[in-house]
Figure 1: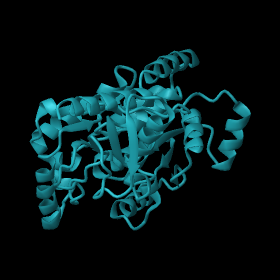
Figure 2: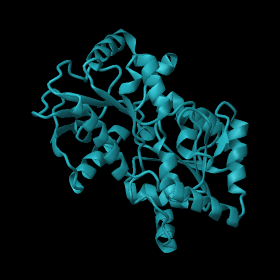
Figure 3: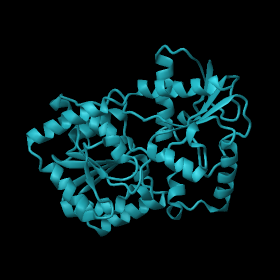
Length: 346
């Protein structure tokens, strides 16, 4: 079986975003291990090489990115369809909805869809009307280097590099409406804690959402309690997870929520919403908050920070064990199973 993987997200503006990371890690697993499959990687989505199965690792809802032609078996990864679940918060305009129409038509010539969670699977069936029996859930994973760092000297020097306080909480992600940053900032003010925010969009002032976040920080008087790093290298992110008192993701909705698994792999506690895919991913190892209520978010932050050292260590051990079940080798293995199923039906 010959498989062609579209790696264009690794060389476009998506390279530092989830889609680019997903594609890169999948490519590395396919290259670095022996599989009963021959792989080819191509950079032009509209000109795939000859193959038995072609995999497009992304699906843009409001841009016509998926070719109509079906030169071989086709697999498409759809991470989530959150803009269709909450259309009032993600206006696409006439052109966007026209492109969505074309994307839906192109999707009819797809043999299988891969998604990140049962939540996303249900949404894809509901919003894109794609057959349920052709949708395969393949959970994502943290990279292998997300783990506890025992070197206190290294962590101390890293802390000085970013001028970090002794105690802080960590947010990793985007600025989209579903991330619920306004309520998170309110909760930070109530809990009187420093929040470190990591993500490229958080310092991109060309984005309306980012400018709104800046205004809200000033209005709440949180300038000294908020540290926005923008994009940082992976090794720095791992150190931040290790230093943080907890990682927080109070989202209104998530298709997966990779930061919670990355944090758990480092042994850092989680406060997150009990909605969509998050309980599916973390099990019972997070403290769940009400995303609509800043008071409750603050209460749950304080609850975690006030745990005894023994309680923190026990939670850390359980979190590391849980996160170890999610690996990129398993992602690749499960993805190849989907290819094989498509190939067998050709």
